[in-house]
Length: 402
Image (cartoon, rainbow, N blue to C red; front, side, top):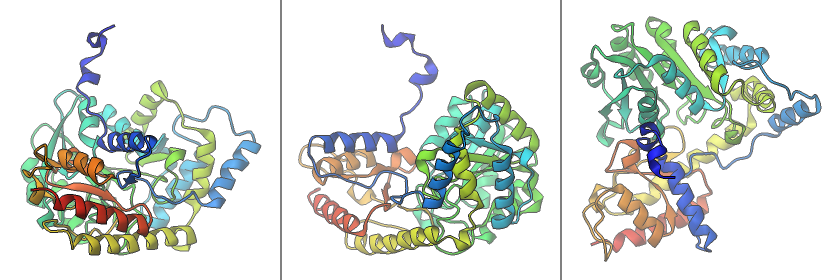
C-alpha cells in the first residue's frame, strides 16, 4: 500500500526534532558508539520517593477504574490550591482539566479554539511542537523573532505589530524551552498591557518549567488582573517533580475553555491514568519551598549551567546568553555555518548537529526546529563530568571545520 493513503494532515506534519535526535543517538549507541546525549528535555533525577509511594498505594487501593474525563476532583482541587499557594491565583476545580502531559493540554486548547486560517502568535525561539500543533488544529502560526541580543525575549512592540484581525491566540513560555530565558515581572507587565487592549485574544501561558527558576519566584502572566480572564495556564508535574514518564499535565483557565477541553478529551482519550493522577496528587500537594528534592535538583541544574557557560566561553565563535531557568543553553553557532567538515558544507544548524553527532558523538538539537536556525540547543540535564567531556568533544570537532 502506498503513502497515497495517508492524509495531507500527517504528510505535512513535521517530526519532533528532539525525539528525532534522541532516536539517532540511540541507534549509534546500539552500535557500540559512546554517545553523550545532550538532546533530551527531561530531568536526570528520579521521581521523589513519597510521590512514587503514592502511586504504589493507588495500585494497592485498586484505584484502577475509569476516572472522570477532566481528572479526579481531589486532584483538580489540589491543583487549585497549588495555584493559590505558589502563584496567588484563584481558580475553582471546574476550571481545571487534567490531561496526559502538558503537550496533550496544549493540543486540546488549540483543537478547541482554532478554525481554519486563525492565527496564533508564537515568539521564537519556540518549543518544537508549538507550530505543528497550531497547524494540526487548522491554524496558522505567526512567528515573531527574539534574538540572542535581546536575551531571546520579544518586545511589546513586536507583539503589537503581529496582531491582526485573524489573531486568535498568543502562546507564551517562561521559563523557556529552548533558551532558558525568564521574563521579569516588568517585562510581563509590558506584554500584559498590550494584550489587555485585545480582550478577544486568548493567552496560552506554558509554565511547565515554573519550578526550575534560578532567580527566585516564578511570575505568571495570569497574575495581572487586566488579562486574567484571557489566560489559560498550562502546567504539569513532568519537569519540576521529575515525573516525565507519569504523563500528567493540566490547564487552568476560563470555565468555557475547561468545558471545551473536557468535551474534546472525552471523545479521543478520556481521563488520564489513575495511578499517575494519584501520584500527581501527592506531587502538587508538595510545597516547593519545603521540598528537599526540588532544592537539590534546582541547585544541581544551576551548578551545571554555570559550568557549561564557563566551558563554552573557550570555544571560538560561540555566543550565549545566561539562562535563568529550565535546563538548556541555546548558543548562536552562526560562526560555523558555511564551513566544511572535509566532505560536506555545514549549511545550517541541522547539518552542524549531524556533524557533531557523527564526529564528536554528542547529540544536540538544531535551532532550525525551534525557529532559530543560527542556534543549537544543549540540554544540561546530565552529570557535570559528561557535560565537561561533551564540550571538550564539541570544541575539538568544531576546530576541524574550515
